[in-house]
Image 1 (cartoon, rainbow, N blue to C red):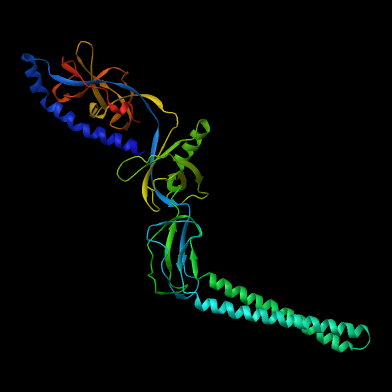
Image 2 (cartoon, helix red, strand yellow; image 1 turned 45 degrees about the vertical axis):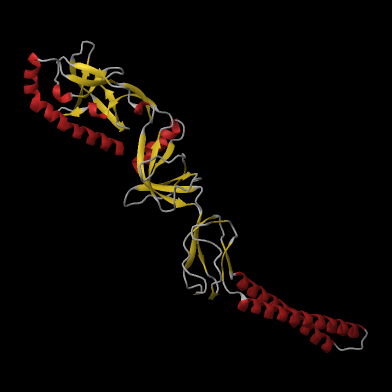
Length: 379
């Protein structure tokens, strides 16, 4: 769709050339009656491979993105990274003063040991009561009391163990590790600041390779793509960066959203790219180029060779006798300065690419052949 708009714009721009040719045709015709044939620059229509292509606006999104937050209250210790560093999975990036939480662990450890000792004593007392009851030297009441005491000691030990486990968990939160491998952003707090679960994000870690690109596609375009995919190989997915350059790695379509946006009648499509050079960043805007895997052979001419009037697009063809013929044509897309001609021109025919304002249909000219366009080899 973008390429169709660029084709129309290119042809409309050529109308200015046509207007000039009409305005000066009478003067030039008079000049040619007594002068040499006008010089023009010509180029042979090229046969070139060209894949059907569509462009979309997309946005890069990290596969994994984690916001690091404090889970306990305390003062930040020395920072373990520099802003923008690559960090590994489970690498320590922040610390919170651990002394208070270590003291709680020590206290809960002592309580657990005390509960364990109480249970050991309760077990011994129960064993004695059981033996006395067996030999009829003890009472059933005493046995029941010792059994109750032993069960209570077990419960106290389990409670002490749970409290110790909770204290150990709180202590572990004083060491903040990166759960993924990626690049860490700017730290929001400096060492020595008091932080807590309410402090917000301390820093963000983003995985950069591979990276995903999300872009909206209309229902019509999506249906066409699905039909084309059933006929042949999957399409080629590329990216155009902000400076106009093409991203060096090809992508792969791997997901289509399960719902349609009722406001735009579009669905989100996702492509995944290797990002070994880290040129793509989470949130970056890019242009997604989707083209056929097997290019078609087309006839193309330089864009400046084609003009447009009320009847439609046309160009000038020079025959073997150097006579100009105005040729009506049908055009396709523009790619790298080359305009596809779908009807009205054959490969190898010489078209005028410079000097159109000095000539008209049926005039004899003095042509100079221009070198082939480099666009033929760069698609």
